[in-house]
Image 1 (cartoon, rainbow, N blue to C red):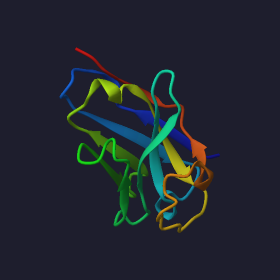
Image 2: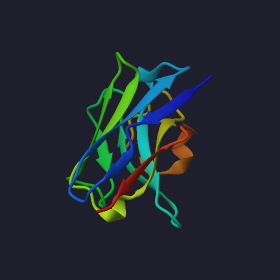
Image 3: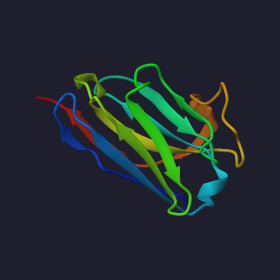
Length: 129
């Protein structure tokens, strides 16, 4: 059974940092691209970053580019998202998601929900003074 468990969220002041983790199990983690998605209160889902299985391709939404960094440790079956220079508008529930197809190298479809098949339950990030 595929399981994705996010952690590391919390309350942080504007300008602060957090590191989110996503522990994966139930599949061969190193075979699949992974992504992070967030949903702010009252808003739709926003895919903010993705990484391929070899960590040599990463993608970011314009809203987080230059502030967030995605990474993965295939030996630990864990995906990470480093959040720096946080803004109040980054307040959201953050989810990790598994790509649907093993070996998919990402590309210009990296942000499409149809390319991912499993999600975790999320971790809440609140940015407030």
